Amino acid sequence: MRILVSDKIDEEGIKILEAGGFEVDKDFSIEKEKLIKIIRDYDAIIIRSRTKLTSDILEKGINLKVIGRAGAGLDNVDIEEANKRGIYVLNTPEAPSVSVAELTIGLILSLTRHITKADKTMHCGEWCKNDYMGRVIKGKNLGLIGFGHIGIEVARRAKAFEMNIGIYDVAEQARSKAKELGYKVYPSLEDLIKDCQIISLHLPATENTENIIDDMQLNLMNKSTLIVNTARGTLINEKALLDALNNGKIGGAALDVFRKEPLDNLDLCNCINNLILTPHIGSQTIETQIEASTGIALKIVNFLKNLQ
Image (cartoon, helix red, strand yellow):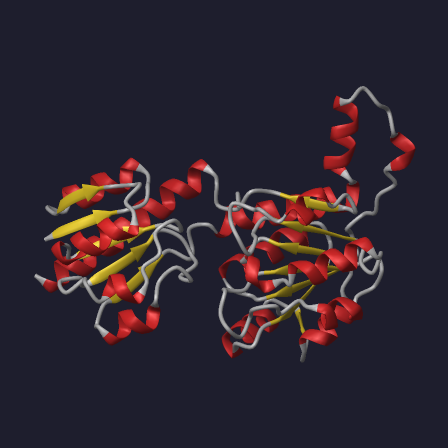
C-alpha cells in the first residue's frame, strides 16, 4: 500500500509509516493540478492545513481509503465527498490542545497587562510605565465558546489563575462535561457574552459557526470586554470586530487565526486599538508537531493494517 504525505510532518511520523511496511512518498509543496493526476495511485494521504482536499481531488482518488489530518481542524477536507466515496477521515484533535491552550492564556495576559505594547516601546528606548495600567484576571469571568479538547485545557489553566469559568456549547456532551467539572453552563451565547469580561473561542469552522461573533454579539459586550480567537478565522466578522475596536465598544482582541491566511487585511494590520495579532502559531510548538505527526501516523498504520 502507498501513502502520500503532502504536507510536512515530523520525521518521527514518517519513520512510523515506513516501519509499518508501507511505501511512503513525500511532496510537501505539491500543487492541486499534480495532486489530481497522482491521487489515484495512493491508498492513503496525510495532510496538515496547506493541502485542500476538495471534491474534484477526492473523485480522482479511486483507490483512496483513508485521509489523515495531522492536527484538529478538518475544514480543508470535503467531508461530505469523502463519506460519499467511503473514504475514512482521521485526525488528531488531542495533539494541539495544550499548546493552543497555553497560547490562549498568554494572549489573555498580553491583553490585560499590555505586554506586547510595553515591550515595543521599551525597544524604542521609551519608558511608558504610566501608560500601561492593567487588570488582574483573578476573579474575572472567562467565557469559553466551545468546550472540546482545547476548551477543557484552557479552563484548567484559567482555574489556576482563580478565574470563574463559564461555557457555551450546543453539544450535550460538552455541557455535561462542563457541569461535571463544576463550571457554569450558559443557556445561550448571548447570556455568556453579557456576563463575561473575557471571551475565548474554541469552535470548528462550519456553516453554523461562521460569524458567530458579529455586530449583534459585539454590541452586547461591555466596553472592557476582551476577545481571544485561537480557533478559526471565520468565527469572527473581522469588519465588525474592527468597528467595535475603533469605536471603543470593546476593550481589546487577540487573534491567531484569520479568514485569509497569510493575513492580507491591512485594516487589521494597522489597527492599534488594543489588538494583538499572531500568525496562526497555536500549534507551533516542537512537542505538538511531534505528537500530531506520530499520532496520525499510528492511526493510519493501524487503519491500513486492519484492511489487510
